[in-house]
Length: 492
Image (cartoon, rainbow, N blue to C red; front, side):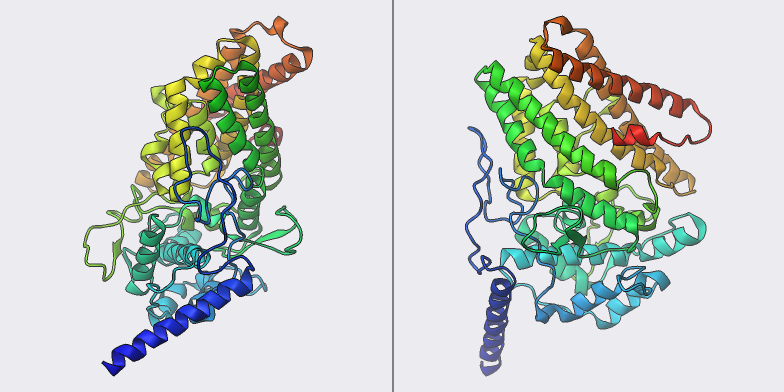
């Protein structure tokens, strides 16, 4: 009895410590959480969990409502230490555990079985989810990274995730209603710290918290997505405006919302063009972004040690998914099934990996866009069609850049992996081509002479870019040898 009371007292002391830690590192972060920013809502959508770090608001868009926690409480000191020592190239220029394949043994030998049942602070839970999911991917895929650097072939990953990662990760993921595996927004949007807390999120003022390779391209991948997501507040507001105005047949507001979406996505694409041009060292960290579903390095998934469930876990990874920014445009403009060759079943795959608020918001946009017929509503009027073309042009720019980086990433040499890689690439290729064709077809069917000169000029420029993408795809796909992609195309 006395032992049980002592254990309970220890738990209370740990909880008190974590409460104090959260308050010290963020003035508004008490155990009950600060009030959330007003949620982005429409007549048919209410944020299901406004207290979540990922709340989807008109103020922050897809970024977390508070900056991610950069340092874990001292109770998790050993976890923090291993993550700091993990990258292939550490921030101080020395080589880390992944460089020589020493991470797995270090985890098995030194990482404690942390009890996370008593952690309730949302900000600490989100940071732990980020850190354990990053560590899980690093542990499982460490042998593949070593093999890839030697032979350009992934080989086999570790199939069993040890209990000292699996148990706390599963507990935290269940608490957050997420999958216990690394996904896109966790690796990007919840993986930055501001250098100057008084300055806004920008390329020059943020740096990654957790990294795999430590190379410049990984840095750019993370900070580029974060800085770009700063402008998703306007994209979220515009998307809800598109749905609301279509529902109430407000043509002027509908056209304005489409132009607002195009302008917001233009700022997103401008930032990504600065940071993600070409592949560079993408292959040096892409290995760790792979999922454990339909990937030959895992064969039949991953087993989580000491969970009582012997079923293998199978999840898409960062490399097989995309940012919610991409899914938003796909759903809003009904682009997921433009043709059988380019079908992107977002709601059945990628979106199910996201945080609950992201799933709810994207699902709402998808169902509302379908029921309202956003695409057909836009095509009934020349001015709306022109605004629709402007918005689609920015979606195309985003998807084309995503396709270009995927194409430039080095596929492994095994026949099975190459087949899977090229199958996924073919779907993405068809989707990009379908969007380009939709832009050209929409422009051809509208009365351009009735448009205001400025809008007509912008629409014609969008069509020119779409046709340039289409010609580029045809030429590249017909070449026997890989053709370098024009930088101007990736950056437009």
